[in-house]
Image (tube, rainbow, N blue to C red; front, side, top):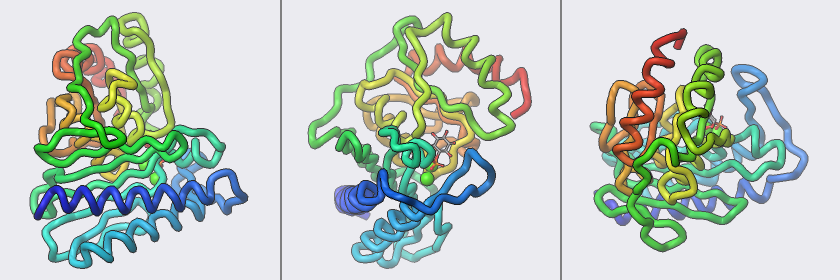
Length: 268
Ligand code: IPD
Ligand code: CA
Ligand code: CA
């Protein structure tokens, strides 16, 4: 498994996907609710995943793929691709800019992340990383994450799965007096790419699925940051709980101290 080759395939697949998603964006779309009114899917998500899968199949026909819309296929190639064709579908369908295309490659045996690309199609930003090779944005290496102090941190928040959302108010109450400010975007993948590229200092995004966060987690790790859940860092992979905290190490520790008691105080 050559991580440079995997990154190049991930980049091609994500850029093809971004072109497809942009071609549907703002048009008339058939929209369905999946688990509920907060869980939407459209032809754009399905068509984008189809295009991404066809790029992967062309270059890596023996690999397995886990995609949000079409589920999992197993393979013999040693790599598992993890695909979210449109992360931030609600933003996408409202014509907002905060959505992303996310493609990651992981070792099929142990889940170790090997390569990842997040494209934010509306702004044209492409953030990518391969294991051990650092993170780059639009072709240039990013600076290592540096923000240490809680009081100067801009923190991206996601609200989590329905049972976790009852804690959202308590999370905001705990964070707002201690940090520079919070932001609630619509895409966990884009939020992680923002942290990796210094457009935010931290993300707290509970309740994620692997396709929401696999690529973004690698972007933060390869930019020198820490990712994991409130039980601790998960180097080389994403936390099995799906509750993702990402930031530079010292800030990660400070945020964990603030968030852990809040998270322990209610239903999860
Ligand atoms: C969602 C986004 C959102 C996160 C949700 C995800 P989708 O993905 O990542 O930021 O808070 O948990 O489901 O459904 O738009 O692909
Ligand atoms: Ca998603
Ligand atoms: Ca999605």
